[in-house]
Structures are given as structure tokens and as C-alpha cells.
Image (cartoon, rainbow, N blue to C red; front, side, top):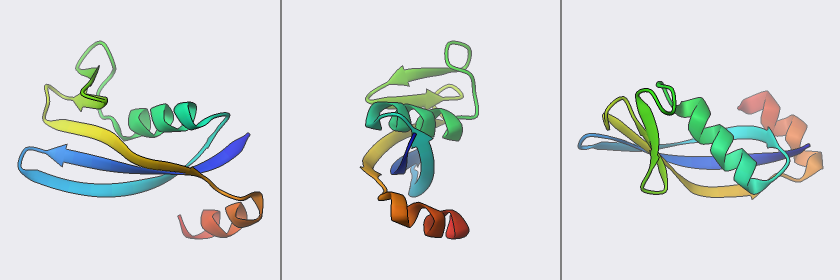
Length: 84
């Protein structure tokens, strides 16, 4: 299992912000998907959907997209876990 820092863009109407998550996954694609789903309030197929390169949530009240995803060196994981 690898560790990634995934940076997300969050759009809520006119408001935009970014956040980052420390994610354990086997690949970049899996890390990005997990980070998006972890941020999501709804359930894909019920009140959320994959759209425009990310997730549209709660009837488009929110849209989450990945701005970057980088693998963390194994020797840095423990330090990041202390602060994230």
C-alpha cells in the first residue's frame, strides 16, 4: 500500500476552497477516487454523480475535483500522519 497527498478543489456555489487528504491506496487513480468519495456527502447514484472530472454532490450544491496527487516517500509518511 502506498500513501498519497491528494489536493482537492471544492466548489460550493460562488464559494471555492481547497483541501488536502492523506490517502492510502495502491495507485494514483485509486487515491484520487477515494479522496473524492471521502469528501462527498451523498451517495454516488442516489444524490451524487461523477461529472466534469470530479463528483457533483447533493444536486450540484458541491463539486469536488482533484488538483494534484503525489506519492509520499515512505520515510515521510509517519511525520505527515502526525500533522494531518
